[in-house]
Amino acid sequence: MASRTSAFDLSKCARPNILKLQPYRCARDDYKDDGTNVLLDANENAYGPGLALDAAGNLPAASTVNDAGSPQIDFLGLNRYPDPYQIELKKLLCNLRNTKVHTQKDLTPDNLFVGVGSDEAIDALVRCFCVPGRDKIITCPPTYGMYAVTADVNDVEIVKVPLDADNGFQLQTDKINEALSADERIKLVYICSPGNPTANLIRKEDILKVLEHPTWNGVVIVDEAYIDFAPEGSSLAEWVNEWPNLVVMQTMSKAFGLAGIRLGSVFTTPEIATLLNNMKAPYNIPSPTSVIAQAALAPKNLAVMDQNRTNIITQRERMLAEMPKIPGVGRFLGGQASNFLLVQILDSNGKPDNVTALGAYEAMAEKKGVVVRFRGKEYGCEGSLRVTVGTEDEVTRFLKELKVVLHSLHTGTQV
Ligand SMILES: Cc1ncc(COP(=O)(O)O)c(C=O)c1O
Image 1 (cartoon, protein in one colour):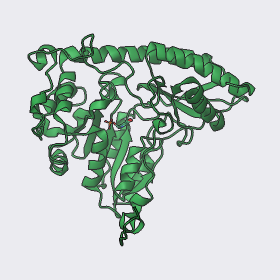
Image 2: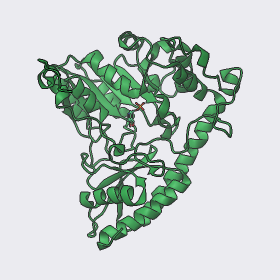
Image 3: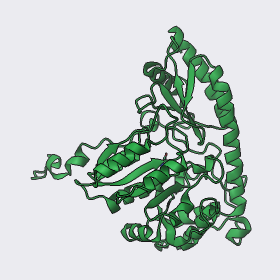
Protein backbone atom coordinates (compact mmCIF):
# COMPACT_ATOMS: atom_id res chain seq x y z
CA MET A 1 0.00 0.00 0.00
CA ALA A 2 1.32 3.49 -0.86
CA SER A 3 2.12 5.43 2.28
CA ARG A 4 -0.43 8.09 3.18
CA THR A 5 0.43 11.75 2.75
CA SER A 6 0.78 13.77 5.90
CA ALA A 7 2.38 16.99 7.00
CA PHE A 8 4.09 15.04 9.78
CA ASP A 9 7.86 15.42 9.95
CA LEU A 10 9.35 13.47 12.84
CA SER A 11 12.66 15.30 12.56
CA LYS A 12 10.92 18.60 13.29
CA CYS A 13 8.16 17.35 15.55
CA ALA A 14 10.15 15.41 18.18
CA ARG A 15 12.22 17.35 20.70
CA PRO A 16 15.75 18.03 19.38
CA ASN A 17 17.37 16.62 22.52
CA ILE A 18 15.48 13.35 22.01
CA LEU A 19 16.38 13.15 18.32
CA LYS A 20 20.07 13.34 19.16
CA LEU A 21 19.86 11.20 22.29
CA GLN A 22 22.56 8.56 22.84
CA PRO A 23 20.53 5.80 24.52
CA TYR A 24 21.84 3.73 27.39
CA ARG A 25 23.80 0.83 25.96
CA CYS A 26 24.56 -2.48 27.57
CA ALA A 27 26.67 -5.46 26.56
CA ARG A 28 23.46 -7.30 25.69
CA ASP A 29 22.92 -4.90 22.83
CA ASP A 30 25.95 -6.65 21.34
CA TYR A 31 25.49 -10.13 22.78
CA LYS A 32 22.01 -11.43 23.39
CA ASP A 33 21.27 -13.81 26.20
CA ASP A 34 20.89 -17.03 24.20
CA GLY A 35 20.59 -19.14 27.31
CA THR A 36 24.10 -20.58 27.02
CA ASN A 37 26.24 -17.51 27.69
CA VAL A 38 27.76 -16.82 31.08
CA LEU A 39 26.48 -13.31 31.82
CA LEU A 40 28.99 -11.32 33.84
CA ASP A 41 28.13 -7.97 32.27
CA ALA A 42 25.22 -6.37 34.13
CA ASN A 43 26.09 -6.78 37.82
CA GLU A 44 23.12 -9.00 38.45
CA ASN A 45 23.09 -11.50 41.27
CA ALA A 46 24.44 -14.74 39.81
CA TYR A 47 23.19 -16.77 42.77
CA GLY A 48 19.56 -15.97 42.05
CA PRO A 49 16.74 -14.26 43.90
CA GLY A 50 17.01 -13.70 47.64
CA LEU A 51 13.96 -15.88 48.19
CA ALA A 52 13.61 -19.23 49.96
CA LEU A 53 12.13 -20.96 46.91
CA ASP A 54 11.15 -24.61 46.92
CA ALA A 55 12.76 -27.21 44.65
CA ALA A 56 10.32 -26.36 41.85
CA GLY A 57 11.30 -22.68 42.05
CA ASN A 58 8.06 -21.57 43.68
CA LEU A 59 7.63 -19.34 46.69
CA PRO A 60 6.16 -21.61 49.37
CA ALA A 61 2.84 -20.44 50.79
CA ALA A 62 2.91 -19.06 54.31
CA SER A 63 0.53 -17.22 56.55
CA THR A 64 2.38 -14.01 57.37
CA VAL A 65 5.35 -12.08 56.13
CA ASN A 66 7.14 -12.42 59.48
CA ASP A 67 6.47 -16.08 59.71
CA ALA A 68 8.04 -17.32 56.51
CA GLY A 69 8.18 -14.26 54.32
CA SER A 70 6.16 -15.66 51.50
CA PRO A 71 2.84 -13.98 50.85
CA GLN A 72 1.37 -15.14 47.58
CA ILE A 73 0.56 -13.15 44.49
CA ASP A 74 -3.19 -12.65 44.38
CA PHE A 75 -3.86 -13.56 40.76
CA LEU A 76 -7.60 -13.09 41.23
CA GLY A 77 -6.95 -9.54 42.38
CA LEU A 78 -4.93 -8.54 39.32
CA ASN A 79 -7.96 -6.83 37.75
CA ARG A 80 -7.54 -4.13 40.43
CA TYR A 81 -4.93 -1.40 40.39
CA PRO A 82 -2.16 -1.82 42.94
CA ASP A 83 -1.82 0.15 46.16
CA PRO A 84 -0.52 3.62 45.28
CA TYR A 85 1.07 4.19 48.72
CA GLN A 86 2.93 0.94 49.47
CA ILE A 87 3.13 1.70 53.19
CA GLU A 88 3.74 -1.91 54.28
CA LEU A 89 6.59 -2.29 51.81
CA LYS A 90 8.03 1.06 52.93
CA LYS A 91 7.89 -0.01 56.59
CA LEU A 92 9.93 -3.10 55.78
CA LEU A 93 12.46 -1.07 53.80
CA CYS A 94 12.82 1.29 56.79
CA ASN A 95 13.34 -1.63 59.21
CA LEU A 96 16.20 -2.81 57.04
CA ARG A 97 17.99 0.55 57.12
CA ASN A 98 17.28 1.71 60.66
CA THR A 99 20.67 0.63 61.91
CA LYS A 100 21.47 3.61 64.19
CA VAL A 101 24.98 3.77 62.74
CA HIS A 102 24.81 7.30 61.36
CA THR A 103 22.09 8.85 63.53
CA GLN A 104 19.77 7.86 66.37
CA LYS A 105 16.72 9.02 64.40
CA ASP A 106 14.51 6.43 62.72
CA LEU A 107 13.41 6.37 59.10
CA THR A 108 9.65 6.07 58.54
CA PRO A 109 7.54 5.48 55.41
CA ASP A 110 7.28 9.30 55.09
CA ASN A 111 10.94 9.25 54.13
CA LEU A 112 10.31 7.02 51.12
CA PHE A 113 9.52 7.01 47.46
CA VAL A 114 9.45 3.65 45.67
CA GLY A 115 9.83 3.39 41.93
CA VAL A 116 10.16 1.10 38.96
CA GLY A 117 13.81 0.40 39.67
CA SER A 118 16.11 3.16 40.79
CA ASP A 119 16.11 4.21 37.15
CA GLU A 120 12.64 5.70 37.74
CA ALA A 121 13.99 7.60 40.73
CA ILE A 122 16.98 8.93 38.78
CA ASP A 123 14.58 10.38 36.23
CA ALA A 124 12.02 11.61 38.78
CA LEU A 125 14.71 13.57 40.64
CA VAL A 126 15.85 15.35 37.49
CA ARG A 127 12.26 16.22 36.59
CA CYS A 128 11.55 17.33 40.15
CA PHE A 129 14.44 19.77 40.47
CA CYS A 130 15.68 20.78 37.01
CA VAL A 131 13.97 23.13 34.58
CA PRO A 132 14.62 21.74 31.05
CA GLY A 133 16.93 23.88 28.97
CA ARG A 134 18.08 25.85 31.99
CA ASP A 135 19.25 23.80 34.96
CA LYS A 136 22.21 21.42 35.29
CA ILE A 137 23.41 18.40 37.21
CA ILE A 138 26.87 17.29 38.28
CA THR A 139 28.03 13.77 37.54
CA CYS A 140 31.37 12.31 38.59
CA PRO A 141 32.72 10.04 35.84
CA PRO A 142 33.42 7.24 35.55
CA THR A 143 29.90 6.55 36.73
CA TYR A 144 26.56 4.95 35.98
CA GLY A 145 25.38 5.90 32.48
CA MET A 146 21.73 6.57 33.28
CA TYR A 147 22.43 9.89 35.04
CA ALA A 148 23.60 11.32 31.72
CA VAL A 149 20.88 9.67 29.63
CA THR A 150 18.22 11.03 31.99
CA ALA A 151 19.73 14.50 31.90
CA ASP A 152 19.79 14.41 28.09
CA VAL A 153 16.19 13.20 27.90
CA ASN A 154 15.14 16.08 30.12
CA ASP A 155 17.27 18.64 28.29
CA VAL A 156 19.36 19.25 31.38
CA GLU A 157 23.05 20.05 31.02
CA ILE A 158 25.68 17.81 32.60
CA VAL A 159 28.65 19.33 34.40
CA LYS A 160 31.31 16.66 34.81
CA VAL A 161 33.60 16.70 37.81
CA PRO A 162 35.52 13.43 37.43
CA LEU A 163 36.43 11.20 40.32
CA ASP A 164 40.09 11.38 41.25
CA ALA A 165 41.47 8.49 39.21
CA ASP A 166 44.86 8.81 40.92
CA ASN A 167 43.35 8.63 44.36
CA GLY A 168 41.14 5.55 44.42
CA PHE A 169 38.30 7.20 42.49
CA GLN A 170 37.26 9.42 45.38
CA LEU A 171 35.33 12.68 44.94
CA GLN A 172 37.17 15.88 44.06
CA THR A 173 35.17 17.77 46.65
CA ASP A 174 36.93 21.10 46.18
CA LYS A 175 36.17 21.04 42.46
CA ILE A 176 32.56 20.03 43.06
CA ASN A 177 32.08 22.80 45.60
CA GLU A 178 33.76 25.35 43.32
CA ALA A 179 31.37 24.39 40.52
CA LEU A 180 28.41 24.69 42.91
CA SER A 181 29.57 28.14 44.05
CA ALA A 182 30.05 29.31 40.47
CA ASP A 183 26.76 28.15 39.01
CA GLU A 184 23.43 28.35 40.80
CA ARG A 185 21.79 26.47 37.96
CA ILE A 186 23.38 23.23 39.14
CA LYS A 187 20.58 21.58 41.09
CA LEU A 188 21.73 18.01 41.67
CA VAL A 189 24.98 16.17 42.36
CA TYR A 190 24.85 12.45 41.53
CA ILE A 191 27.31 10.42 43.62
CA CYS A 192 27.52 6.67 43.13
CA SER A 193 28.70 4.79 46.24
CA PRO A 194 29.88 2.06 45.84
CA GLY A 195 30.69 3.37 42.38
CA ASN A 196 29.80 1.74 39.12
CA PRO A 197 32.18 0.82 37.44
CA THR A 198 34.67 1.64 40.20
CA ALA A 199 33.33 -0.50 43.09
CA ASN A 200 34.65 1.81 45.81
CA LEU A 201 32.74 3.49 48.61
CA ILE A 202 32.86 7.28 48.58
CA ARG A 203 34.24 8.64 51.87
CA LYS A 204 31.48 9.82 54.20
CA GLU A 205 33.47 12.94 55.09
CA ASP A 206 33.65 13.91 51.41
CA ILE A 207 29.89 13.61 50.97
CA LEU A 208 29.59 15.73 54.10
CA LYS A 209 31.74 18.46 52.51
CA VAL A 210 29.27 18.76 49.62
CA LEU A 211 26.26 18.66 51.95
CA GLU A 212 27.84 21.46 53.99
CA HIS A 213 28.29 23.80 51.03
CA PRO A 214 27.50 27.22 52.51
CA THR A 215 25.55 28.79 49.61
CA TRP A 216 24.42 26.11 47.15
CA ASN A 217 20.68 25.43 47.00
CA GLY A 218 20.53 21.91 45.60
CA VAL A 219 20.30 18.21 46.37
CA VAL A 220 23.01 15.57 46.89
CA ILE A 221 21.97 12.16 45.55
CA VAL A 222 23.89 9.12 46.75
CA ASP A 223 23.19 6.06 44.60
CA GLU A 224 23.68 3.02 46.83
CA ALA A 225 22.64 0.35 44.33
CA TYR A 226 25.49 -1.93 45.49
CA ILE A 227 25.53 -1.00 49.17
CA ASP A 228 24.75 -4.49 50.45
CA PHE A 229 28.05 -5.77 49.07
CA ALA A 230 29.95 -3.15 51.08
CA PRO A 231 30.86 -3.61 54.77
CA GLU A 232 27.86 -3.52 57.12
CA GLY A 233 26.86 -0.06 58.27
CA SER A 234 28.03 1.64 55.07
CA SER A 235 24.61 2.89 53.95
CA LEU A 236 23.94 6.56 54.56
CA ALA A 237 20.16 6.15 54.23
CA GLU A 238 19.57 7.11 57.88
CA TRP A 239 21.41 10.37 57.26
CA VAL A 240 18.40 11.79 55.41
CA ASN A 241 17.06 12.48 58.91
CA GLU A 242 19.97 14.86 59.48
CA TRP A 243 20.19 16.69 56.16
CA PRO A 244 17.43 18.61 54.35
CA ASN A 245 18.98 18.04 50.92
CA LEU A 246 20.12 14.43 50.85
CA VAL A 247 18.63 11.63 48.76
CA VAL A 248 19.83 8.02 49.07
CA MET A 249 18.77 5.61 46.33
CA GLN A 250 18.74 1.83 46.68
CA THR A 251 17.45 -1.09 44.64
CA MET A 252 16.36 -4.71 44.91
CA SER A 253 18.15 -5.47 41.63
CA LYS A 254 21.56 -6.34 43.04
CA ALA A 255 22.14 -7.99 46.45
CA PHE A 256 18.49 -9.05 46.61
CA GLY A 257 18.76 -10.68 43.19
CA LEU A 258 15.44 -9.25 42.05
CA ALA A 259 16.32 -7.18 38.98
CA GLY A 260 13.27 -8.66 37.27
CA ILE A 261 10.71 -7.12 39.62
CA ARG A 262 12.00 -3.55 39.08
CA LEU A 263 11.87 -2.09 42.57
CA GLY A 264 13.97 0.88 43.58
CA SER A 265 13.71 3.00 46.69
CA VAL A 266 14.56 6.57 47.58
CA PHE A 267 15.21 7.62 51.16
CA THR A 268 14.97 11.35 51.68
CA THR A 269 13.24 13.99 53.77
CA PRO A 270 9.44 13.78 54.03
CA GLU A 271 9.29 17.05 52.07
CA ILE A 272 11.26 15.75 49.08
CA ALA A 273 9.54 12.36 49.30
CA THR A 274 6.18 14.14 49.09
CA LEU A 275 7.22 15.91 45.88
CA LEU A 276 8.38 12.64 44.31
CA ASN A 277 5.22 10.84 45.38
CA ASN A 278 3.06 13.66 44.02
CA MET A 279 4.78 13.40 40.64
CA LYS A 280 4.69 9.66 40.09
CA ALA A 281 2.24 7.73 37.96
CA PRO A 282 -0.49 6.75 40.43
CA TYR A 283 0.03 3.00 40.42
CA ASN A 284 3.70 2.75 39.54
CA ILE A 285 4.50 -0.37 41.57
CA PRO A 286 2.79 -3.49 40.19
CA SER A 287 1.15 -5.61 42.88
CA PRO A 288 3.27 -8.74 42.09
CA THR A 289 6.39 -6.60 42.50
CA SER A 290 5.20 -5.35 45.87
CA VAL A 291 4.33 -8.85 47.09
CA ILE A 292 7.71 -10.26 46.06
CA ALA A 293 9.62 -7.28 47.48
CA GLN A 294 7.83 -7.63 50.82
CA ALA A 295 8.58 -11.33 50.84
CA ALA A 296 12.25 -10.61 50.17
CA LEU A 297 12.39 -8.38 53.25
CA ALA A 298 11.12 -11.06 55.61
CA PRO A 299 13.63 -12.94 57.82
CA LYS A 300 13.53 -16.31 56.06
CA ASN A 301 14.24 -14.74 52.68
CA LEU A 302 16.74 -12.20 54.02
CA ALA A 303 18.72 -15.24 55.20
CA VAL A 304 18.83 -16.47 51.59
CA MET A 305 19.94 -13.05 50.39
CA ASP A 306 22.63 -13.07 53.04
CA GLN A 307 23.87 -16.50 51.97
CA ASN A 308 23.96 -15.43 48.32
CA ARG A 309 25.88 -12.33 49.31
CA THR A 310 28.38 -14.44 51.26
CA ASN A 311 28.82 -16.70 48.23
CA ILE A 312 29.40 -13.67 46.00
CA ILE A 313 31.98 -12.26 48.40
CA THR A 314 33.77 -15.63 48.47
CA GLN A 315 33.91 -15.68 44.67
CA ARG A 316 34.98 -12.03 44.62
CA GLU A 317 37.93 -12.94 46.86
CA ARG A 318 38.73 -15.86 44.59
CA MET A 319 38.76 -13.60 41.50
CA LEU A 320 40.98 -11.13 43.35
CA ALA A 321 43.42 -13.92 44.16
CA GLU A 322 43.32 -15.79 40.84
CA MET A 323 43.08 -13.11 38.16
CA PRO A 324 46.52 -11.56 38.82
CA LYS A 325 48.06 -14.98 38.10
CA ILE A 326 46.83 -14.79 34.49
CA PRO A 327 49.43 -13.25 32.15
CA GLY A 328 47.98 -10.05 30.68
CA VAL A 329 45.83 -9.17 33.68
CA GLY A 330 46.95 -5.88 35.23
CA ARG A 331 45.82 -3.88 38.25
CA PHE A 332 42.39 -3.84 39.76
CA LEU A 333 41.10 -0.27 39.61
CA GLY A 334 38.86 1.32 42.23
CA GLY A 335 37.64 -0.75 45.15
CA GLN A 336 36.08 -4.05 46.06
CA ALA A 337 32.85 -3.06 47.77
CA SER A 338 30.55 -4.47 45.11
CA ASN A 339 29.57 -7.57 43.14
CA PHE A 340 31.93 -6.73 40.28
CA LEU A 341 35.57 -5.87 39.74
CA LEU A 342 37.20 -3.39 37.39
CA VAL A 343 40.44 -4.77 36.04
CA GLN A 344 43.02 -3.57 33.57
CA ILE A 345 44.05 -5.74 30.63
CA LEU A 346 47.61 -5.38 29.37
CA ASP A 347 49.14 -5.48 25.91
CA SER A 348 52.15 -7.68 25.19
CA ASN A 349 54.41 -4.90 26.56
CA GLY A 350 52.62 -4.95 29.89
CA LYS A 351 50.75 -1.68 29.36
CA PRO A 352 47.00 -1.20 29.97
CA ASP A 353 45.54 -1.18 26.51
CA ASN A 354 42.10 -0.61 25.05
CA VAL A 355 42.74 -2.61 21.87
CA THR A 356 43.67 -5.70 23.88
CA ALA A 357 40.83 -5.16 26.37
CA LEU A 358 38.27 -4.72 23.59
CA GLY A 359 39.71 -7.74 21.78
CA ALA A 360 39.39 -9.77 24.97
CA TYR A 361 35.81 -8.56 25.54
CA GLU A 362 34.81 -9.55 21.99
CA ALA A 363 36.65 -12.88 21.93
CA MET A 364 35.30 -13.84 25.35
CA ALA A 365 31.73 -13.19 24.20
CA GLU A 366 31.91 -14.40 20.62
CA LYS A 367 34.20 -17.39 20.97
CA LYS A 368 33.83 -18.41 24.58
CA GLY A 369 30.28 -17.44 25.51
CA VAL A 370 31.37 -15.33 28.49
CA VAL A 371 29.96 -11.79 28.39
CA VAL A 372 31.70 -9.13 30.47
CA ARG A 373 31.73 -5.36 29.94
CA PHE A 374 34.39 -3.28 28.20
CA ARG A 375 34.89 -0.04 30.15
CA GLY A 376 38.13 1.21 28.61
CA LYS A 377 36.55 4.36 27.18
CA GLU A 378 35.40 5.57 30.60
CA TYR A 379 37.38 8.31 32.31
CA GLY A 380 40.42 6.86 34.12
CA CYS A 381 39.63 3.30 33.03
CA GLU A 382 42.06 2.78 30.13
CA GLY A 383 42.22 -0.87 29.11
CA SER A 384 39.68 -2.05 31.62
CA LEU A 385 36.97 -4.68 31.78
CA ARG A 386 34.22 -4.72 34.37
CA VAL A 387 33.46 -8.26 35.43
CA THR A 388 30.45 -9.23 37.52
CA VAL A 389 31.18 -11.84 40.17
CA GLY A 390 29.53 -15.07 39.06
CA THR A 391 28.78 -18.42 40.66
CA GLU A 392 31.69 -20.73 41.46
CA ASP A 393 31.29 -22.55 38.12
CA GLU A 394 30.95 -19.30 36.20
CA VAL A 395 34.09 -17.89 37.80
CA THR A 396 35.96 -21.10 36.97
CA ARG A 397 34.90 -20.81 33.35
CA PHE A 398 35.68 -17.08 33.23
CA LEU A 399 39.21 -17.59 34.61
CA LYS A 400 39.93 -20.45 32.22
CA GLU A 401 38.66 -18.62 29.12
CA LEU A 402 40.31 -15.31 30.01
CA LYS A 403 43.66 -17.08 30.22
CA VAL A 404 43.17 -18.67 26.80
CA VAL A 405 41.92 -15.46 25.18
CA LEU A 406 44.72 -13.27 26.56
CA HIS A 407 47.34 -15.81 25.55
CA SER A 408 46.05 -15.85 21.98
CA LEU A 409 45.80 -12.05 21.83
CA HIS A 410 49.38 -11.68 23.07
CA THR A 411 50.82 -14.32 20.76
CA GLY A 412 48.68 -13.41 17.75
CA THR A 413 47.30 -16.93 17.53
CA GLN A 414 43.73 -18.02 16.83
CA VAL A 415 41.40 -18.11 19.83
C1 LIG B 1 24.79 2.50 40.10
C2 LIG B 1 23.49 1.99 39.60
N1 LIG B 1 22.37 2.65 39.92
C3 LIG B 1 21.18 2.23 39.50
C4 LIG B 1 21.06 1.11 38.70
C5 LIG B 1 19.70 0.72 38.20
O1 LIG B 1 19.08 -0.02 39.14
P1 LIG B 1 17.58 -0.50 38.96
O2 LIG B 1 17.63 -1.89 38.45
O3 LIG B 1 17.03 -0.40 40.33
O4 LIG B 1 16.90 0.45 38.02
C6 LIG B 1 22.19 0.39 38.34
C7 LIG B 1 22.07 -0.80 37.49
O5 LIG B 1 23.00 -1.39 37.04
C8 LIG B 1 23.44 0.85 38.80
O6 LIG B 1 24.57 0.22 38.46
